[in-house]
Length: 415
Image 1 (cartoon, rainbow, N blue to C red):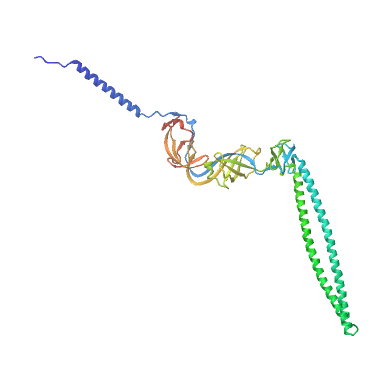
Image 2: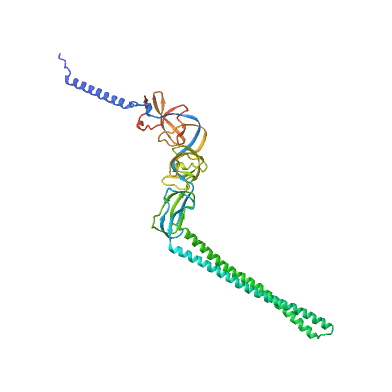
């Protein structure tokens, strides 16, 4: 009996299919395994990173700001009248006294106006003196007339009394006594009227003299103004200090109110610093500060906060409390540290790069010869340190320098 053998071609086909499936399965398994492998931890030189230790204790919040030293007492000198610049007497940078002439101005019209005002004052004073003499004579005439009438009244009264006595003795007629008495009464009324006239004349004279006196005072004030304007053609410093700036040139025509020069008192300086808009909300007047002049550090205090924001910053004035070191002068660049507040107890670390306060992020915590990424919750920040609210404990060491190069790694090997 013949037995049918299976075809060899089918066996080979099945063997090839099995081998191919095994290879494909092996490739898939290898691909998945390689995909799940984490990248090798890079090696980092320990000396190339900054490592700081988390501390616990008093925490001082402070911010830093840059600025310049500026004089506390600055005086801009403006032109009092329209004029022409005749000569620049003193150049910027020169120490000046209050009466030092800085600029000479010229204005013929102003000089003529000053001369006219002087003559108007003299005319007003002369008119006042003439009216005063005239009114004095008038008053004396009235008083003399009143005195004469009073004498006549006295005589008439005596005569009336004598006629009355003679009438009683039968030596004079009653008509004579009546006539004498009538004359005396008439003179009494005239004396009273004349006295009223003297009082009325005195009142009228005072009013007239007051009017003339007002005209004299008006002319005197105008003369003073014109004289001051003429004197202002010699522009003086006004204070002891240093001439910082002259804004005009010889021969230039200027209008009244134009700023001509700036004088500052260099011995009294303050720091004018610019604080970032987001940090300025915590700055208040009276806060303590320190100023680094590159040649020493001095204590200061917040004296003024500008209400406006310019280019994302707020100008803060710091009053300097200590004597300034040698070399400090106006426009010197300085760095200021303003102390915002103090927390009695907190956990904090040196402020890492690109970390925002009251936020969260990750840091590399150092564990022996390696550093592992951990999540950290941050609190309030200072210029040099930041509060830790979660993720780290006192004594932990973390890398606070820039680690953006290793942001895809969760572990670093420290050499």
